Image (cartoon, rainbow, N blue to C red):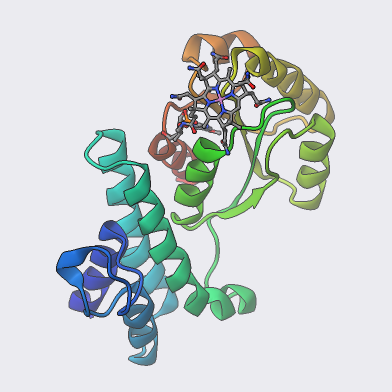
Length: 222
Ligand code: B1M
């Protein structure tokens, strides 16, 4: 069992989706996250173990390597693809409640801003870490965050901005959320954002990268 979970983690870490996937070249024609996850479940390994001791372990390793500039965006995207392909096998267990998500994370790029590459990476890493992610997309107004919070009470909110002209919109969103849905935890990020700015606008946490976002969320439920 340990060996199989280790292989699943390895496939996610190196972005090996399935047997026919040519990437990475040194794993050509080997089973990928897809086949190994199915095989683990068929062998009776619990879906929770497959998730937390296999898939999530691989995704965490990628997050740390990305933070340390040891891998880059394309590798993270391949890992996320391997993860999401494997997750299809776990879907029925999530639906039946046999596997529980850690919590819900609502994320969006703030109003006026159309950049979504960084936001998508955060979204994928958080999802790959066992959280349910509600991705509201780009150019998101405060009303949409509030509506999502009403639908998913108690969720943590993530705001992304890439422009100096739109990071100021974060302030308005944070203030409004604090009034409309008090107690909501708000995490912010994006290239021009800093911790100093976070303090100024009263958000709860700033992360410069996806792994920091994952670690913050996991600390909240520890
Ligand atoms: Co735009 N753009 N862009 N752009 N664009 C930048 C951001 C810019 C720095 C380019 C430049 O001038 N050198 C500049 C901003 C200047 C500033 O305000 N300081 C700029 C500009 C000016 C513009 C336009 C105004 C250009 C124009 O039309 N005149 C326009 C604005 C449109 C709008 O949003 N209203 C515009 C448009 C675009 C495109 C649509 C063409 C395209 C976006 C496509 C897309 O996202 N689907 C685009 C792109 C691609 C860029 C650059 C080249 C790349 C951004 C990116 O994706 N980086 C960028 C220049 C650059 O960075 N070299 C630029 C990769 C990504 C992985 O990093 O998004 O920083 P990043 O995300 C990181 C972290 O920041 C963090 O994690 C991610 C992974 O490490 N992170 C979070 C992000 N969100 C987080 C949330 C968190 C936590 C961490 O918690 C919630």
